[in-house]
Image (cartoon, rainbow, N blue to C red; front, side):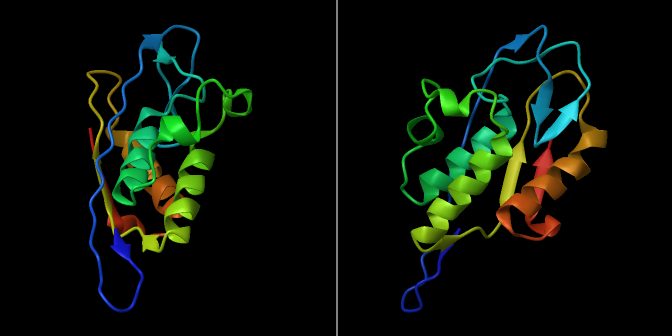
Amino acid sequence: MTQSASHIPQFRIGQGYDVHALVADRKLILGGVHVPSEKGLLGHSDADALLHAITDALLGAAGLNDIGQLFPDTDPQFKDMDSRILLRSALQKIQAAGFQVGNVDATIICQKPKLATFLPEMVRNIAADLAVTPSHVNLKA
């Protein structure tokens, strides 16, 4: 992430991390993609742990709190919300603070389901939501 002020460029890196329990009767959504699975992630929103981690990384790099403070799970307006909306909102907040996204690199840790075939669509979603080219988004699983 770089600050867009013209006098002294400032490069910042944010780290995000998220974990949710796997439960029956929930869709598994990662990177805005429905991944067929017997279980999904438990959460107030759609529980997209990948997008939550990226959202936290953006907010942290800009010094703008975290996803839990901006989108609390006690607020009914965020119930079952698409996490891509939260990511785009975080992007607007960091841009308003004078920052822009340079690149994203993220690792998804899970044993199953296998995610390799879903990664390209996740990359496209994240790149579109952050207004960067797909070559600036790298995902590993």
